[in-house]
Amino acid sequence: MVTQPDGVFGEQPVAFVALGHGHAAVPDDLIEHYYRQSLARYKVPHAVYLEEKLPKSAIGKIAKQVLRARLTRG
Image (tube, rainbow, N blue to C red; front, top):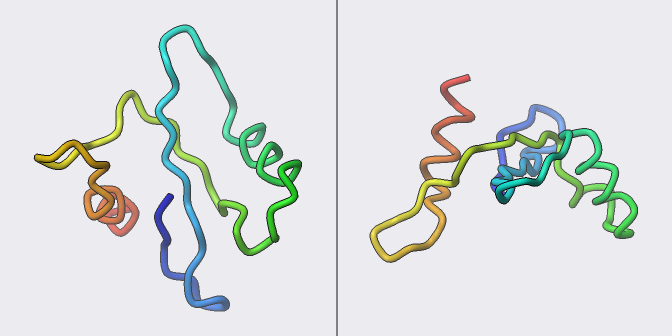
């Protein structure tokens, strides 16, 4: 999960999700799942983007700076 700038709240959480082979989901269903997990409203993602695979850094961690750049490009 990364954040994107927001004019009212300062920033909003956004989730990038890579589903495993054979799995399917709809972004709205994933957001509803977060609500059912009893997360505070400010922790629930403002948007969910489904990806084939998530970008990784040289050491194998998710490259959040690449995901943030995708948000700013539109």
